[in-house]
Length: 128
Image (tube, rainbow, N blue to C red; front, side, top):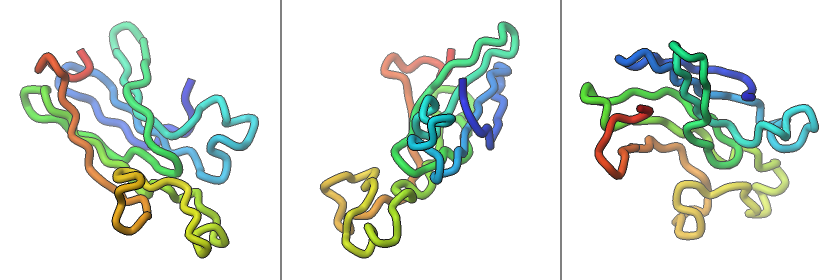
């Protein structure tokens, strides 16, 4: 199961990459949505109908877009507005809900959007 599909991309082998964008106001809090966890990216096999979670993003974010190199061995995905679930009062007090990607080593202490580069350890085709 997944919630709030927001982005789709079909790779050269007809795999369907699905990015989700569940509202931060319900993510991990509302009983109807808690089962979904954080926003994620899934990959579907158009031939079998099988859909699997490929990755889960950090708190308060959405996975936005993906593309891969022509040889399908490097995938690029974007993580947008991590830590966006921080309430204004908590933000003002310096209590940030997520410092991804640097965590405690972040010079600002705030989460930042980023592009993530993904490759298989064995050098194979992503999603195969």
